[in-house]
Image (cartoon, rainbow, N blue to C red; front, side):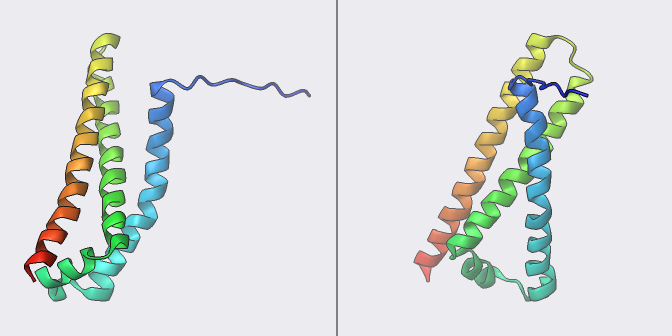
Length: 127
């Protein structure tokens, strides 16, 4: 039996579908690592602003938290986009909504990343 190669076009829907799966796969170790570090190894009663400042003074933890924010928010916004697909039947309106949600995701992820980095630098400068 001969196999036939199927060409899948790389449009926005295909990329969004793949990104939903990739973000889920990447979120699993990020979330479990975060819970393990914060709740099991350190404990919620041991955390204070000094601990957070010390933890976020590391570039590794800044990148880790920015990745966690970006992937979790991307996964959630893409899920919202899929729910809205059930209610928005006009393709042009849905395209605009998809673009607005992408810009919203990008803005919040950048804003959150900058806030993590700048708040840490401000805290370290005050010490």
